[in-house]
Amino acid sequence: MKVGVLGAGQLGRMLALSGYPLNHKFGFSGNTDDEPATLLGYTFAKKNTSDNIDFLVEFADVITFESENTDVGIVKKINKKIPVYPNEKSLFITQHRGREKALFNQLNIPCAPYQIINSLEDLKTAIHTIGLPAILKTTMGGYDGKGQFLIHHQDQINDAWNSMNGVESILEGFVNFKRELSLIAVRGIDNSHKYYPLVENTHHQGILRLTIAPAQNINKKVQETAQHYMQILLDEMSYVGVLTIELFETENGLMVNEMAPRVHNSGHWSIEGANTSQFENHIRAITSMPLGDTTLTHPFCAMINIISQLGDIDAVLKMPNAHLHLYDKSERKNRKLGHINMTADSQAELENSIKKLKDFLPK
Ligand code: AMP
Image 1: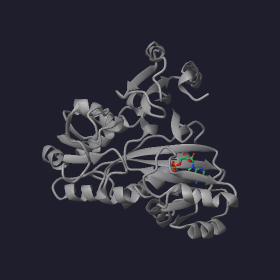
Image 2: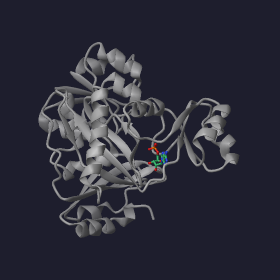
Image 3: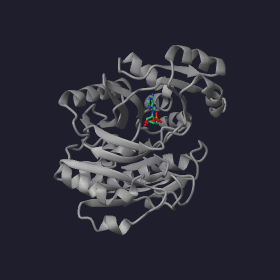
Image 4: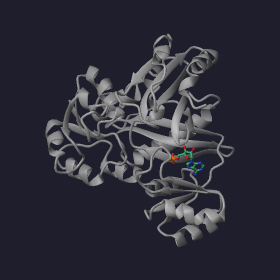
């Protein structure tokens, strides 16, 4: 089939790399000529505007997207001609933190208390109810911790609201979490489901740096609970493709932070770490192919992001159980340039590999 991807970043690139062996063809809509995916397939539109998306739609049998910030209006327009997966409803909900949290509450999925904020007055009232510390976030468009303000004291309220530049925001109660976890799953057009194990994520300045797969010391009940939350979300949205939920592990169990309607950085380990990667499973789902087995290829896996600068990539290439994935991007501060996947047969072996790559991690 011909798959059209709205966007042309590293996620689109890895989707195409996983889909070519299945005989699919790929087209992208990118903003510049040198985005990570543009050399891997046909690039039709320079921008995701409804005027010039038509060529991509003419090429493709099915459309998907690599960002939750995709314009719902464009998806609606495309959907009149060919299917878009995940569907418009899933995109509409997951691109807005308030809609997401409303759905979590509706489905009795635990999440932080929240209120939508449109003014300084709203913020003062919400803090009165939710208390401090709390986090103020833009409802839409934020990523990698951007557009967020952690409020500790009352005297920060003005600064917090000013930092939102007047856009609609959400105040969330601060969750005292032990660890950050994520769960990735895929749902097929035929309502089949597959789940990856919970993984543990470490962030630095809002950017994911390290994922351990599977997360250690997760009992069966916790995995089942996360899968239950995932399943009711997938079914409620009639979702097709890969969905990610980010969770906090707390003293009182799991709380969901947010979801992403796409393949996710915390699932990159699955390229070598699982029998079928998140990318291939997303492509299988949206092209009506049977979903692939999500079992791990090794008992211990990890992923380290390469951020800002490439570093000593030869050292990675010399390691037997490390796999380098570069995105064809130039170096720039805080930019994701690639990642390294590691597989191991023991925890000690994995720890040793991570230690060898410590220069890729924040000091
Ligand atoms: P987000 O963009 O929602 O994923 O937030 C970025 C990071 O901020 C998360 O990975 C957490 O480390 C932290 N964070 C977000 N929301 C909360 C919250 N309600 N309580 C505590 N920490 C949070």
